[in-house]
Length: 372
Ligand code: SF4
Image (cartoon, rainbow, N blue to C red; front, top):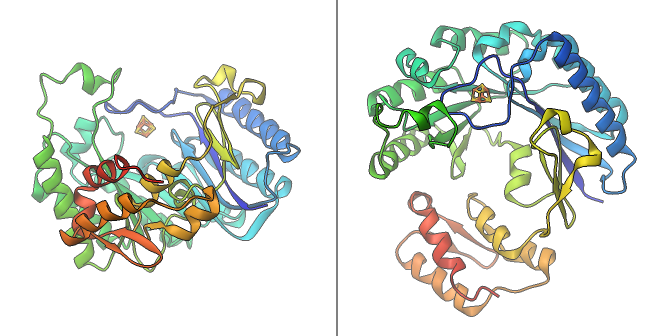
């Protein structure tokens, strides 16, 4: 049995941001309490389910905005997980917060229940951009929040940064990256703004100027350079860390390791089984989980692992699928190697920094060959 990552989705937000398509609703104290009880029921169900692997080495409480639950409910949840499931003593335990709601929780108390990592939705260090995104916080809230992290003794924290915000310029992006660097974030996740249907941004596309592909590429390149110059390892296309403090939980998604997701819209992959809960809080119950027809595929393994700096590993691929990649695939990879976009070693194919910039094109070209 392998270790497993546990994801718990908290589907509540104080207000919907203008770009967001995640499943979340506005809750209240009563709903929060009932929801946590439901999650606890699910944890007990999974504990006794044959699909459940025997040890949890990462826990990620995401959302939504988990911090709106407040300290007591979050602590109840963490205590329930650690007392019911076999949680590794070295487990990475992350909670997502928003800058304005950090003040709702006592981080030191949660630390005593095992919390050791925080992921905060900063998005921008420009108040104008934050307002346009419909975020509830100001840059001062973000500053106060990072100070809180240190005060509570949690130095392993990640900040989310958005690229391609209308109004964003290279200068305001640098201001945001400087905020992250100066606050000593150990990890930075970047996201390119995508306009999703059914969001206020989608309905407003005529009135806002969104970044085109070239602008987005320039912003991404600037980010990679700035963070490299400041000692960050670019360990995944969109993720950067210091002192090798990668997101161990998210790494499981990129290397197809097992994870169990609990909550409306949460997905799981355990062994060859892939399944998910419906995107509806009323339907959130193990009796309603839906299984997908496909488990892990070789193509998916190649596509996801090439996103990481450790790359696509031949031996792991063989172990997972008992397959060897074709000569045609290697020949195609060699063409990219000659262009300086990737490295091929005895053990792996890894994209180089220049290759990350055009990763979509490289991966789709590689996958268009007869890969096996
Ligand atoms: S806080 Fe996060 S999950 Fe909630 S609406 Fe905003 S972006 Fe979406």
